[in-house]
Length: 265
Ligand SMILES: NC(=O)c1ccc[n+]([C@@H]2O[C@H](COP(=O)([O-])OP(=O)(O)OC[C@H]3O[C@@H](n4cnc5c(N)ncnc54)[C@H](OP(=O)(O)O)[C@@H]3O)[C@@H](O)[C@H]2O)c1
Image (cartoon, rainbow, N blue to C red; front, side, top):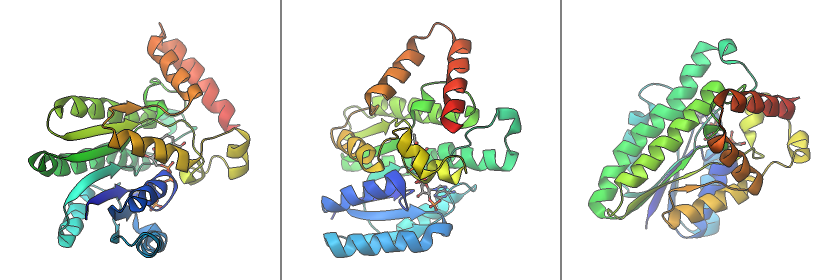
């Protein structure tokens, strides 16, 4: 059996990705923080029962220093070849100016979105290259294309890192049989905004946010196809394209702050 390590699998896009792997007969090693232990275990049990695959639930707070090493040790104990790595776990600080960020929360977010993602990738990519096959899928964000990004400064910058490092790695991996894909969703109906205490389900529905299953499917297909980047949705494509051709980063920042604040009103 082939195995996928999926971080942030307890809810949202990560849980939907886990279902897609399982449906295709790929064993899954699911990871979330310890606060979602029961939910993660329930998903692993559901996938084992419905899809007759191996499914494991491992908990680690990936926003802490040394978390990637601790997760790797847990995965090593299972002695499974990881052929797919999905760096999906992520959190945001949204709706706040940078100067109002809490330092501890911001450090944890950067550890989770940037450092842990990089360390897990570095660890798992080498055996993939030796095997001559493997797939890496990273969750970036349309916010990462729009930097400076009003009211999401550190989050958007962390996702700009994910875009940049994923594309560079995809380039470096050419000819190895291993690929790295990143998907840059726009606003999606998950716990992401609820977790930040910002926006509820009803408002997300009204604003037409994407469904996590649709985003997961687009990313999953792009990963299997070995594509470098995928930006789901017409409006999302338009926003990222506009940000790239904008003659003024100051203007981009003003417009993005306006759009974010209207979405959060
Ligand atoms: N939703 C959007 O609008 C949107 C848009 C663009 C990009 N994204 C990106 O998509 C990815 C998935 O997010 P989502 O929208 O599906 O949100 P979500 O439903 O909140 O899922 C986030 C996942 O990450 C895990 N996670 C968060 N903090 C963690 C920590 N400290 N240690 C370990 N795991 C942790 C969560 O586990 P716990 O349950 O244990 O917290 C959960 O499984 C993120 O990288 C996010 O930045 C989301």
